[in-house]
Length: 316
Image (cartoon, rainbow, N blue to C red; front, side, top):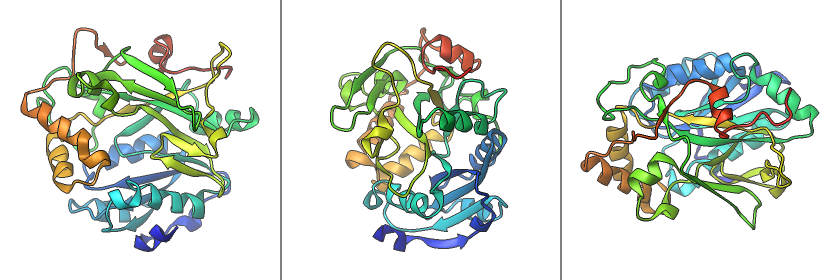
């Protein structure tokens, strides 16, 4: 909890939080162009309050967030790596404000899709999860990408990113069980086949548990990939059935990606000595494109369920 002392309060609107409000917890740096659509997307789903940590942005995003009526904002210039890649900051805010709430912990380029999300608000999902005795909800990170070069179409502020990055890999994923914490470990997809083709085990993890009915006894163990206590990670059925799950559509691969990856590589604040960003940089230098002949164009959540990427479980 000592990492909380690195946070400076910029705007505190947590007094507005209602007893049953769904909350979103986000760390961001220099994501100004993404923020309008991100906020509107989750407002429409039913998130009632956003708690942001700004990691020393220089692009005006701090002032933008400060002006939003449903955002509470903290700022820090402390090292992202030294804070467990921002999780120490968010776990403190979850401890302080999340207790008793359904809490969504996501990045500004992650967009939750779940069964019936086009007709049922997030509160319908969380009410059903609560009534069914579930405390957490998983979502596979689904990398989205354009058909052409990443910089072929310029992403405009406020634009739906999936007007551009509308393709995804329908298969090419591996799943294994973590014997220690009990979570599933998912890898593969376009990042692994493009940037880690000769070392797929070094590809990024795609398993996430972003939505949790939070308690002060909980904590994220490694990003949002896994939690403690371990029972929060048991979001799958080993007896042949299916439990409800969603996807986080990942809008990383837009025209902003090259500049962002260069910035993050220079900062050196990411996992394993920024190995992932080193691979991105090398791939971009070689003109890497993510689209392939097996790519599918995204339609809706039903398509993802048909492909086995999300599941309604026994949610009627």
